[in-house]
Length: 460
Image (tube, rainbow, N blue to C red; front, side, top):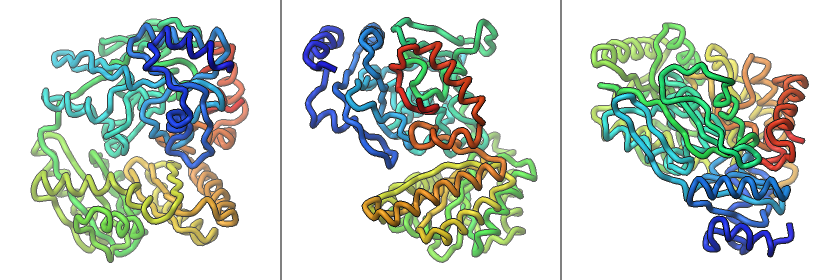
């Protein structure tokens, strides 16, 4: 990119104060939360209006400039790492909640709205937006849609895709496309909405999102079940699901993670436990009482050595805040942290937990395992130092072994972190070559100049 004339043209679209070309500024946008090589863009652009966003997309397409959209950069698979010398479109200037409709129970937001901000705003009106990625305090809703983000409540409430009613997005040429509706049912035209969700910015640039809301649960009950054996804990997860009980959350932490979290948060987690399950049931008070009792009985029968029930919301919030700090707690222990999210059918959780233990031993690595065990989505977290070339080689081999094991158990490479750059080369193992070829055909049709986040998801 011949920077000077392009910078001048972009400044006319968004204002000179919203065009960033200083290397110190651009370094911020060269990487995301994945452990991958950063790439320096040539420019970052911050549109403050929908029209400016569309004009930036059209400009980049006209001049063949690779364009990567970035919210908060919390992506864990390299999806927001730009192409070297390309452009980054920042969504934090489009950060308004446009509407919260309490009668029809939906919200309309711009892509730069922080997830937790929307959750708090709708809860203040007695409504509920369930998707809660671990990064919700900083992640944006545009990023959540682009990655089809999940979270702790995915077991009962599903993921971002289950709440997207409609989208407006700019195609590669800068034309505004509308898909979906504000109605409960919508069967008109192709389901472009579904095509965009999880496409990681490779097919269009999100401009407006309509999200389904639901009533706020009337009651909830949280408990912590303590186990002296890892197998007993993982088998309890499968047993709860097999009894057709669907908690709002059902989280697993192994001893390594427990110790890291307790050192970080000081909430009183049992340091001697081999594993703990954090479980919350919600809904009508009567059902909450019944389901809570059934869950306690299953935990005891499966070998729980102790059960602690949160006495009030303050205690409950402390426990869940500690769980959300798991990644931060583990990150303090080593210079490099690799967080994976291979996911298996829920009944195969015990087998996957055993496999992760074996992989840690085989490759002589420290792996802390936690995650959304209730929906099969574990987060094996490898603690390492990328500067140690020999150890990093073992890390890469262990990652591939984790993926192979998940697929062998009928699972998937990613439950919620997406494919990005990190997993693109493994994709054929799960989908086969035919699916990749078809996906590339769709990409060529919608983005013939290949400017939208090139190289992500399907490579090429």
